[in-house]
Structure formats: C-alpha cells, structure tokens
Length: 338
Image (cartoon, rainbow, N blue to C red):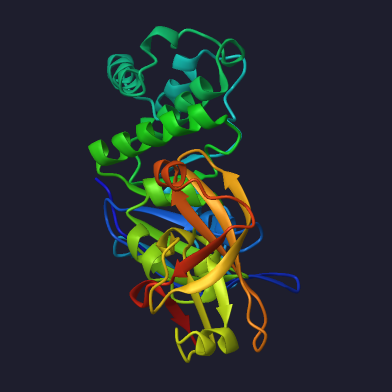
C-alpha cells in the first residue's frame, strides 16, 4: 500500500554549510517524483532525511499521517536503491533478494513465491542463481531493485540508480522501473542530475538549487513554463536575451527573456517580424541540426541564437555557414522573467 509523504519547513545544516534551507514538499500516494538539480544542491540530503539516515536541523517529516522526523530507518518501511549496487558478493542474486525476508522470519514457501515473482517482474529468472560477479551492471541493478521491493515497502527511494550504466542499459532500465512503479502503484522518489531521466520518468519534477526548492511541476510544466532563469537553463537548451535587445526587437519589457532553440523558425524569406542574421556554425546532432545565427545590431550589440532545425528540414533547406537567413521568434514562445 503506497503512502503519501510530507516535508514541512525542513532545514539541514552541517557545521556552517546549509545543505537544505526551509524546504516544503508534499508527495501524493503512488506518485513518481524526481528530485533534480546540480551536484551539491541538497537533493541527496533530502532523500537521506526522508529515509531517516540523517535527521533535519529543523522541520518535520510525515509519512501518511504519522510524524517520523526522529524515527530510525527501520520504522519507516521504505525500499532504497543506490548508484552502487551494494549486493552481497558471496550470495547469489536469489539470496540477495531473499535476505531481508529471511530476517523477517517469513516462511520459506512465502519467500520463494515472492522472490520468484520479483525475478519474473525484472525479467531475470534465468539468472537468479548467479553471483553478482557473473552478472552485467544492468543485471546487478535489476537485482538491487528487486531487493528494494522484496519487503513490500510503503515507498521506494532511488539515489542516482542509473548513472553508472551505459546509455542503452539506462534507457531499458528507465522503462522497467517506470513499469514496475506503475504496476505496484508505489510512491517513488528518485534523485537525479540527468534532465532526460527526470523528463521521461517522473509524474512530477522538483528542481533544486543551492539548498532550496526552485520549482515543482509536471515535466511539461517545468519545460514549457519555467518560473525562473535557473530552471529554464537547467531543463533543456535555451537562448537568453538581455533586456536591451529584448526591447529593441519588441519581444518583452521584462528584465530577461528567453526562447528555446526548437521554437525559433529559420527561413530564406523576409517578412515583417523576421530578423536578418548570418549563420556562423552548423552542428549535426542526429535528429536535428543546431544552427548558430548571429544578428548584428550597431546600437545594442550582436545577438547570438542557437536554432534547432529538424534533420529532414535541415537536409531539404541545405543551410550553409556564412549564409544570410531570416529568424522568426514567435512571441507566444518567448519566456519572460523579472
């Protein structure tokens, strides 16, 4: 049975270092939440406080309707999976998953049934008698996931669980974790600094920076409607335009404006709202080309924009470096920040 979780006015100070500063967060039962931010922003500290591995300097933590701020980890009923697999090297995959259940003195038949079901779920039934050293990194991480789920926790904590794996294995495990989480309707909190992981896996993303919570919302809300320049810059690519240039080109009167590269339209035809510029660089990036355009202005200075052009469009248009082009910045796609 998944449970809700609440963090209320939580701060954590290590000597003179403020790791968390008055953080408030509510997570609904069955929700998949990603804590996203750069290294040192406080996301792993928050996860450790939720788990009970550390205690907050101030504030309260609730699991369901029960305050657990000062309770030890053993009384919080969570499963946890770290970046390092932390499997017992001398135990088989099966024995690693069954370890926590044996400590609970469950019947052998019940242990067998639950462990076998988990190995079916992670699609590793064929490897359950192997030692960790006989398994790939991705297989070991699946076993670590099964072990975290074996005791049927109220919620699951994941601390950078995929960062040590190669790209293809990461993609596969992303889908696997999401499928299992949805099937079990398990409240899940994952720490990551990988924006792609957060965007593809989470129901909700919590962006953190310098010990504070910057914004919380669905992946679409965070990407399309960032509340401040940090969030806009951390999630995806973006062009920032200073106030003088923004006013000169009639974009906004706010202190800073921004637009994502894929929202900009390049053409060879002039129209009333287009700006004339010169292509200075073209990078092939697989499914799109990143085209750099410089718009010259003797009054407010040059403006450099990154423009993402879908590969098939770029192939058809056949742009070249030093070519003059026209840039359209749709006003409805421009983000404005105070």
